[in-house]
Length: 463
Image (tube, rainbow, N blue to C red; front, side):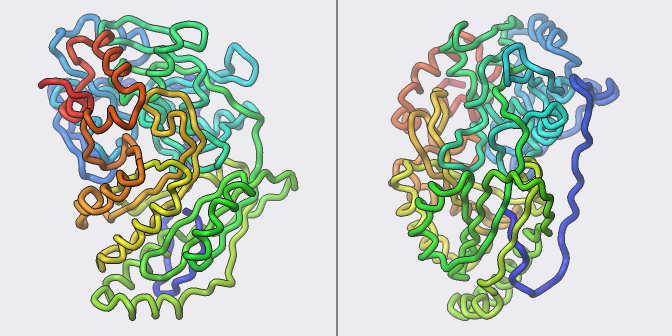
């Protein structure tokens, strides 16, 4: 979200620190390997998920990773971790926790308009290294702290009616299996493995490297404006068709939504804009804290404070505009609906949220193109994505008990990294290739070395 400050209650904005550009195939210093006897406890970004691993392992390269898997006891369990930006318990383990931070870097690919990306490369670093080579990803999610392997494994996406999720750019993968073997897959070599492994929740093996399709580096022009929510909801499908990237954020108990568009910009101009997301969040929270007992008054006061005539514009490199900083921590649920059901579903979700006077976080609505990865929420389906947030430390159970059923009534598939409570039986009805994936997982990892309790529940495996 990038919207100018319109609720003028308190000044201030969070500072953002951009990751440094590292050379291709840069490695984290060996001192980053946590000694086996006393690893630090692990917690995810929001603090909701945590574990105490037996060892925190940071292999120097693919060969060290494969050797460790070959030599480790068969009953030893492994889970990989990137930025810890998933809200579901994909990572927690009491055995080995593996970071790919030292497998980081970008190099030109063997084919035209491709790049080789190591699995531990953070998206922020990837964007900068590609830019230095004159290339870019066609799209980015709204935060860029995730590792490449973690981002594609959970079907991380941005917004754009004709733009698919990140994993759709993957042309080939190098996968380190539970046995320590290295499998290569592409459209011509093990194509079914590629279709399964692109979105695999870290359950088929460790993604050490990917060949990724890229495009020439490009600039975007961003425009942000406020519009009465009912009006914007009706215009959303048209705006998504007119603009390269379109999304909106509904601002609870205000009656307004913030629309954001990005389009290709060939002007050569750079126009910076002050991102005031934290100011807006702070003001929405203050309105909730002061007037949550009186929803009608809360809405009226918000109407006095909002200036719908204000707009924001920015022009810059795509990666500088598409991804933003998120200092305020939260927990989140997100489902992906058939595109034709998106607007009807979001109307129901907004109505349900405004039955709860404790809600203040904006709701996010995006468009995503279809792809062919077996466990992709966008598998063979043009989609709309709806994300609902609750501040970390505040009540969030309603995301599952009250909002989840609305998503499911509209045919929603859950984001693998966002809170949901679906199990194997429900997922098998939503994903046509779900049972094929489960069978392939058992073949590659019959002892379940890459599983934890959450994944066992997802795939219907016994403990």
